[in-house]
Length: 317
Image (cartoon, rainbow, N blue to C red; front, side, top):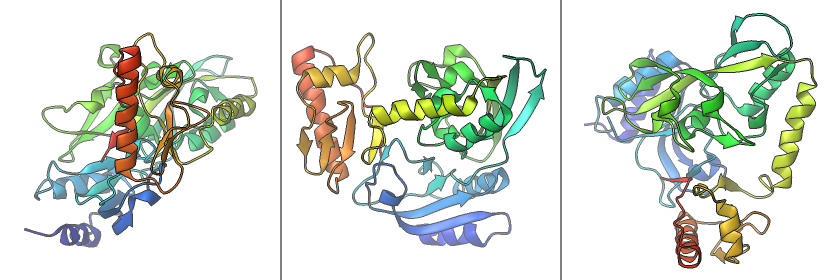
């Protein structure tokens, strides 16, 4: 039985692996909330072959089903004591964006593009600007990666991944490649088929195919307008993990929390943003335990005063 350090070294030294293998990296450097102790092992494959090798290797160890998948870290609150199991980061999984099918170049003609899981939405915005593609602009300025957005069915400005996704490629936890074809029945608000196991195995998105449309309009200005809207909502003011709670059916989580008078309330270094009640900010070296306690407090108060139970959107490791 190998130690986690030895597992990392074996992957790093293999001729079948192309990528980074990192040891004892603070999770505060890998998440947008800037919280968390050291990760014992982070594996960053540069391509799908290396990802498959790493997964197959882990499947032969005690960590076969006990590892995390990390994208942009925009929805993760990591443990103060660190992460003692392997983390596979897909941030470096960035093959060139492909235009799969050019039907015609007329205004509003549907096109198809394929993006790797590690691609950021800033990179996709740049590509769409260069090629005069619209259809994904609502995601401009969204932190995180394509893979994470697919996993969470990211939604913003009346759009969602479920509305624009055509298909996705993914791997099971033992490195076997699969293809998912879009089925709207598999999706719901903040829900995707990748959140549930397939054949008892984790689903790891490696790439996604989206529908976009040719446009003669000013794509760059339209994208910048969405970034400005995010700025006005205060998404970039402080370190945070975006929306903390899902919106209950027919309600808005932030409005419920605000009506309970909780804006600005804090526990330790974790604080409910004064400008947006559904954002918790890292105001002063916040700890995971403080964020968790603050979230529990919010849930209790909203339940008492509104008789509605809020469901967390962010994920604790």
